[in-house]
Image 1 (tube, rainbow, N blue to C red):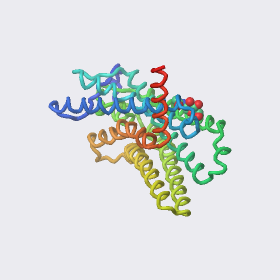
Image 2: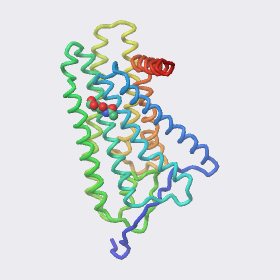
Image 3: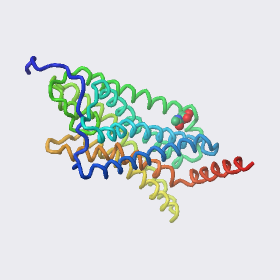
Image 4: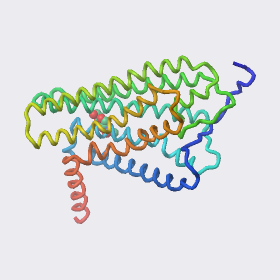
Length: 314
Ligand SMILES: *[C@@H]1O[C@H](CO)[C@@H](O)[C@H](O)[C@H]1NC(C)=O
């Protein structure tokens, strides 16, 4: 390694999505629409759960937390991407880049932990219906949420500090649409061995264990429902668990294959398409899959709208 070219760089260039210029407006409109849907869908869930007292239960507190985390997770990357698509020189200052990386990791992890918490909550509710209220006490709920926040803060801080230690030389073109950890590591001109090792270790813990726990919870749920078979119950269980599991697999499948099995021949384009899946598509689908299909949420929507109408006319 030559020391001569180790000038510390002050900004990176985010090369963005690999799209031809004639498709630029189409993608811009598509991303903007998806982002607005994410923001509105998740805000609607948060507001409904705050306003309607029927929804003041652990499950809905978790859902509301998930919506908050989805909202922030896509706000970390998409607005910057949209802004960069309009500008000629899509640069991002060094400090902003690390900040983006920190919040990306923070809300990504938070989402991962919340999905486990919610799977555990459903498991307790369906497999131990009589003890559910004593198991999921408000105190435990709060503890679980606080634990999620503490773990994610620690994990995001660890990776950000490890990244801040590295030096970057002339090459400042990030082949990605946000400051992704692995894309940044490719640019570093100091030794990235420790970073890669830490990614592998914490990544396995933070992604793999939650994923396995979620699968186990849903497997227990399905088997407990199949013990008392009723056509409608089985249908409902499979439609609910199936849709939850499809979102969970989309999220974990893409993240795990990107960070834990980075194969040498995977192209930057393929990586970006997969990154779009978990940064744009899952935060957008979550409110629809988890909440808006749900009868209680629909009821709450009706009640909140009616109440507003009545108070408006009086
Ligand atoms: C998250 O969950 C906690 C505890 O269950 C709850 O008090 C809080 O209101 C939730 N936060 C949001 C944004 O919904």
